[in-house]
Length: 261
Image (cartoon, rainbow, N blue to C red; front, side, top):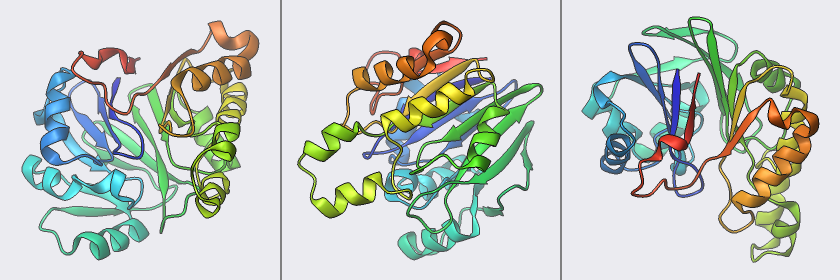
């Protein structure tokens, strides 16, 4: 399995997960045209995409989902709450949509996908655990806290895409208004660097690779994310490969912005 982050952050989120014969997109927060452009730049193959998994209805996760699903002739998979909010924001769609439920695995091609509840200020947000054969990847990029069910799903994975959104000090001293700071650091907001590091510390015995994502451009830096993660891993820092996802991989071939199992 190969995972490539095409976008990560408040301007848009999209991840390409390729298996032996097919592929999935997790979120589609860019325009359809930009998603396909970045996918081609990354060496991905749009014809392999068999479905779009949507974690929640915030615009940076659904912006291109409708057009992209219709253009690629693939279904959108999301929880009932996410679909309701999606319809409210985007109106009716001719794209095929399929409802998924927490804790109920479903198949997309050769992939086995299981949604699990995330803690975020959305209607019915989720993360996804995706398996093919003996390999499993976990994706949890918008959650204010790591609950026991979230941890248990991630601990069953070989690699994870995990949020590390903000540095608490930068958030506290930054330009955001008080209400927005409160929302971000709440249990239904976004995961901080220390929280992500503590999660990685607990996951160290289980996973081989971790990519840290949804990094704030205002309240964080990639350097702070990586340092925090490595300090959290401690003695395990040479056993778990850790990278940081960029908002935009840019013109350089972004094969390094992901991992391969």
